[in-house]
Length: 145
Image (cartoon, rainbow, N blue to C red; front, side):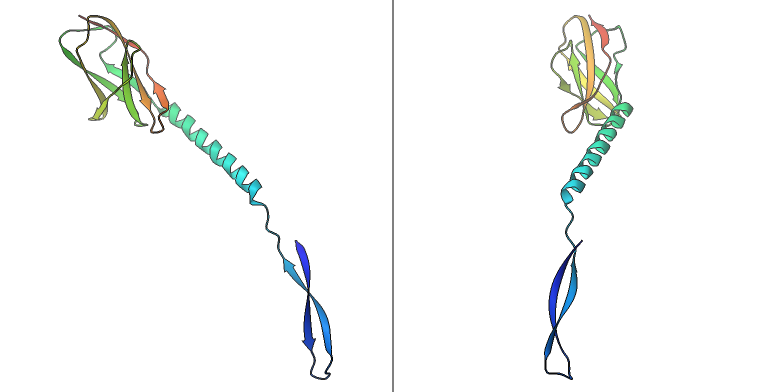
């Protein structure tokens, strides 16, 4: 803490002379908020990372239907995907582009039409609101006849 001397003039009634009196005034220096801010940011960043890791640990996504090695016949099929609610779900066929699913009745669904005959691999993923992949499912294999 720094001190600053301030002179104050005091008149006494008994004499007509003016006597200067030294009075100390305490001036508090402002502490640098930079170090606090930097450490606070580190703590907040650490907490966010911990929450993200915890969220990823508790996240899940699985292709419920079709079941492994199921043979699909017909012109259309509806995939059912179970997933935690950490974002939205997308599905990919044979490592192709990721397609959005719809949410209803506690599950994610994809209406699959116009598929070709042959062996197919299906993967699903959860994408967070920030656009980052939260969780990727295991590959599900099926056959289309």
